Length: 605
Image (cartoon, rainbow, N blue to C red; front, side, top):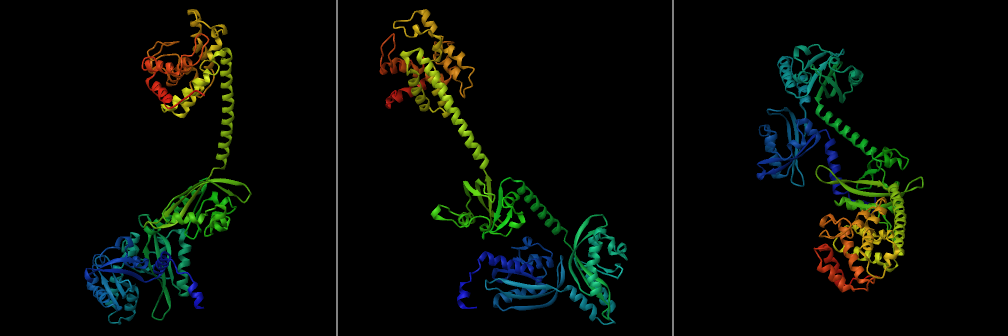
């Protein structure tokens, strides 16, 4: 390979390199423990441990990382390995710690260690548990004279093992077993004598057990780590990983099988729980009618729900590992500044920097040619350490919602037009009956709306004030026109007829389904704060705020305008009227707002 090609090769990302290292270390069969020297090399703290070491030492990584080697392995000093650690740390020269027996209150076994110092200054121990090899070697090498003593030692060592050990004859009956097998299965030694292995293996797994054994028995090939279910004496089921080896006599002939077993029930239960949780999560995602998927930093799909995959006529598993550019147009993924397209990848990069991205109104065309509108959220997914490993994408299809919203808006607009037309018709009706007050209702509505806005009413209430004021004199259609247009003073009888117009209006409007209490507002617009108004003489807060606003606007506009029975008194006199009777006839806050409006330059249009 040329130098140019070598230089053009991308350097692996640090995170990827660390992941590759972790996978490599976790898949080797030797135990690996990384130590950090503390107190000048007097002690060493466990920094990391691989899966093989977890199995050999019967510990969990999270339970030992950060703890002293003297605490986790109290026999390490007597074992002689602590001295090796200290020399390697001081000199930097690797050392081989020959096969020796390690023992403490928790574990024991024969181990062979290779210790070196890493470039980072860590002390690394790579080792193998050679207990079984040592036992078997010792068994073969003892002399005939020492065979009985060796047999006792051999059995004692087997009984100290946490793993179960057994030997069976061709029929599957036990010829030798250790105490661990008895503990695993809950039987006494007497009960285990001459027991057949099928007694504790479920019948549905007999075929699997026979198949695992046949290779070792007939071909002499070992079967490593075969997972089988065992039934304890109390009926409880446990999961055990077995390694099966041929058992030979002095002539090398296979006379049975020997095996090692490790109880992995906790691990299997945890793995099954993970699988169940993953299946549950997938089921929940598949039930979601919206698009849900997860991408990695290479924009590859890690997980997708069925709604998303079906949109592309694919099964979810067919999408796993694909890049988004295989589904979406490249310019959508990579971006196109000329078209104003930012691109999915730019958004993903933001998410990997810890930000959440939201976007609405995104239009995506499906394979069938239909266009769909989506609201989108992208959020970071983090592992147990807080590192971001993926982008969770949720796209909500709002196509039908937007269509419905448009139809609803169009319908509302049409209703508004029809409603406004009806209100204008009502206003025109009353003004035709009283030509001298033509435009009065419109001007009252203009001032009343401004007052309502000034005192801070909600927009819906302001709209109600506007509409009520536009037709507040609709009741005058019940007053004879000669009274409405009479140039002189009205008699008491005529005035009493005029005073009926709020109730006439109420009778006309109460059956109409307005969005506001229009009929009540108009009924009360001649009521006064001290209870001297009409038609019912109700006081103060019992009068709706809308009616109190229209009352002030009505008085100001009427006094400032010409009437058949009198000339205009002018706007100043009108404002003086409401100012003098503020708190007596008229609402204080309404009058103050009205006066402020005219001070600010309000004029009737």
